[in-house]
Amino acid sequence: MQHDIYSVRMRAAKGGKHEEGGKHISGGEKLVPYPEVKDRVITLVDKALTHSRGNPDFLQVQVELVRESLTYLSPLHSQTNRVSSFHEGRVVAANLLEKCGIHRKVIHQTFTLLEQHGGLRGAIIFDIHSDKRIDTREKKGIRVSRMDWEQQNFERWAEKNQLPLTSRVKEAMTLATKVANHSDTVAELCWSDDPDYITGYVASKKLGYQRISKLKEYGDKSGGRVFFVNRCKNIEAYIDYLEKKPIFLDWGVENDTQIN
Ligand code: WAQ
Ligand code: MG
Image (cartoon, rainbow, N blue to C red; front, top):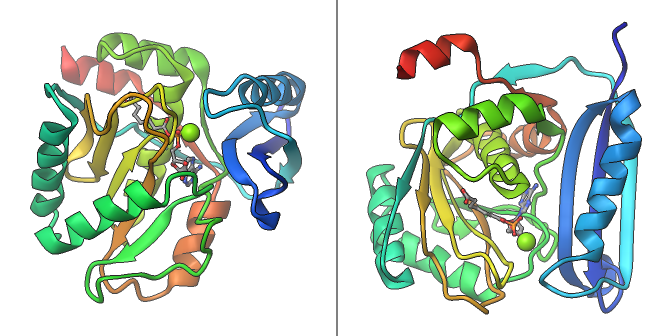
């Protein structure tokens, strides 16, 4: 029996709701058939209540029927860059972003943005032509939503690529793949705002998912995501894709044989 698909979203903050100036603690988004909604809600509530950024005093879960049909995407090719310090990691990130045609000045500008804006709920959209942040969501940022990856398929992929079988890697890879597959995306830069997680990445359709083992120091609560675009013609359509288009990752058997 074909089940309806539901989008399950969670956001948690401390010091009041996000829109009332509360500090972002945690968020999450899933896309699941109806019988799995209950388990996903529990997983997301658990994530919010046991977070390294602190205990939230505001928590919201939203469950919504998705009417559009799903689009299936293959996970980006992944590579791990091991570095000995976060300074070295930033150099690796800058070199990768430069390969995408982004100027040094802009790259350093966005490093500073992520250092200062730690705790934004969503991502910053940055136009490399005008050198400006072009979304107008301020502290909210753009939250990519309606995406997921079936657990067993993810685990097979992660084992093959010798990556940790964690929900963090699964969620980051899902988001990076969705974002990179839009033609307006030039690249993405990300490091976590969690003080206990220092691995980040640069991603694009061409570079794939380039993990960088250190992009900040332990204990640092700064972090976030930047989506680089180049004169995005229709920013509303771009944001609509990120927020609304239902995407599922699927690592096919053909990928299996490709790697062997
Ligand atoms: N849409 C847009 N931005 C988001 C989303 C989303 N769905 N989820 C998180 N962000 C932004 C937001 O500003 C967060 O504060 C920031 O990113 C960091 O989120 O080992 O764990 O979930 O390969 O803390 C990457 C490396 C880990 C994983 C990233 O990010 C690996 C991570 P976090
Ligand atoms: Mg976080």
